[in-house]
Length: 364
Image (tube, rainbow, N blue to C red):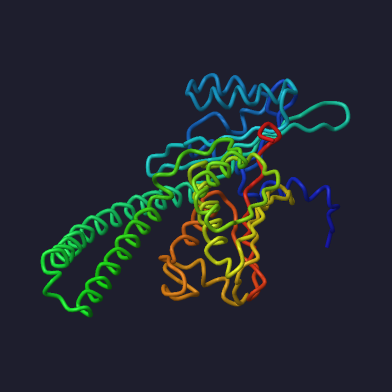
């Protein structure tokens, strides 16, 4: 049996890849296409077939005349002229029976004498369809949550209103334990209202979030500290803030994360005044932001539970709250492509950390 040399296997291997691949010279002329590229051209009736070898790719895109083709031509031109090293964008591909989406990437390389450009199309139709369904699901979730919240809030307002009327109009006729029962009922109605609002806010994180843009976390934190100013003063809290980075994200939602984490740090400080440190470190293409306190802490084995909806480690008599704040934090961090976790020990404090992808140098 004849054993092929490794370099002789490369063309065979490239032909088996489910990626449409072509190689251009430094002027954009097509020098090579693999089998997937050729089949793609046949299926979609466009000029990507074997007979396009020797044809300039930029001319093909110009003939297409679409906005997508013009975008592709502009990106490739910049690579050919050495103005950029990598180019990618998504473009739709129509067929009689389905709508497909492809991600195109183009990168230049050299053999030591001439520059070339490798162009690849990746079929991302499944990912695109999954994203579309996820967006629809999020919209349905918000509609459902809005409907539930509206339907629950109205009878809840009525219950609260009539309890207050009873308390006001019949105060002289109600025994002391009756007044306590009314107070319990009003407190329960108020907590339910807060939980409903929290669920509604949770459902809107994806659908009502702002588009990502450069966000100065120092500025975001300054706003949060201003909002918590009275609480910080009344608890004699010591807040130490190290320099925070600029990231790409939703400023309003990141503000919610800091608000909830700082609120928790102050709430669970124990008998001593709250002592909180906020810092950030850079690690492997992302920022790790941490909020550390010296409070009452909790058992490390319970860290997963605290991020679940309405899960609490303490009774309402010990500490007020609905148990949805950390759930909101997790969902917001998830939306930003990061992770959130906690490290804690009883009576030794807690550190909540979350990651945010580090943007390009232009944002730093």
